[in-house]
Image (cartoon, rainbow over all chains, first blue to last red; front, top):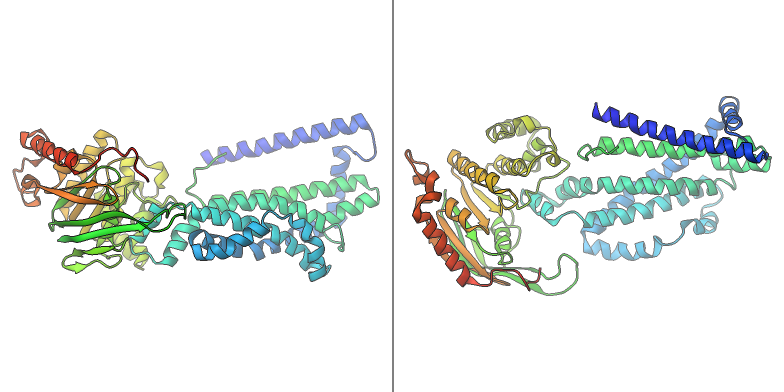
Length: 255
Length: 274
């Protein structure tokens, strides 16, 4: 019951914030009266008609699937490598230099190289997003594994645990909340980069939709697509919240 | 019986921050015998190497020289029937009370029903049945410690090592926990080694109290026997050991241990490196 109440509170908080944004938007639109800032009503109508008559669903699915593939390709290897580096000096000696070189670089700047190497197709877009998720998860997995209290390791070791037991029963669960948090952060960046990746060499995806509507001076459609991309980001956020609740039930629930 | 023969323990310098070379000497030349079925205590100030000594007896640290014998066998690595209770209990926050208690059995590869059959009676004995599905974060310090004891007992040990087991409990809970430990021992023939910095606790619980002193390395410098605390006397009918704290003899033993501690080396940890 407590949890349900907290959920309602959270949902109503989001609803109030959304209503506030819509109100500011409506006011700004009415005040300027310019075609490039249509009101929320008009934009929502465009969103509705794109969803029903147009192919908003296809574009959204294309974007979501790119993010999901990128995630599938990068999360597990980054987490495994990072956790191993956090617990083993030998592995860290190999991983840390890569982290220091790779992590601070703006991955978007690699876009031309990725395009040259992997071509203009789907692979390049997925690799760009995967690269961002990978480096973020790698760093936080390594740092999180280092923070596992030594006494906890000793206490489980004293029960006769093997290295595999320690990895699966101590290091992974201990790092899981941190991994989900950095996943949340990196997915935000991933959606932003996805927009950029979808503005060229493709005719599918919400990023394409935005740029295409912009070029056609179809402003209500452009806003509709921007909203759709925002909802996609929100969807990922909520999905990670749910995953955290399922995977980390020991965490005291915060609303 | 547990025997330390000229035990020396060291650990890598700067292991926490991964800097520094060489090794820090924690314990040197420690000799002691902890009788089977009894409670022994090691008393010493912070930084005298008590915890390193426990780690060596548990097989978590290999001796730099000398050896640890349990029932005549030298300890190499983890021994199945040795259980350790650590200062902050070492419970896994992501496992419930029952899942924590059955962890040694999970690691040993026992099946679920087999694990239940062994863990549930222990939880019942320790008054934890109602808290089976609680996560440790929802338990008080005293309860967490009971879970740690349950986990230790689930492995059916013959040797129980306790590193500062009561130090984070408030004074009254601490006395209750001491009685609780004595009840646990009454129910099964365990050899118990308690490491503590409390003289009163050592003198109340243990039939032999070993005083540690010095620093980097520390060593065992004195031994006090308190026959009143022997298991055969304590658990005999009509035993008055429960009132031992009020006896003049108890006060006298505490004073003697305190004097020996003062002679053993520096007590306060100012200026000591961590």
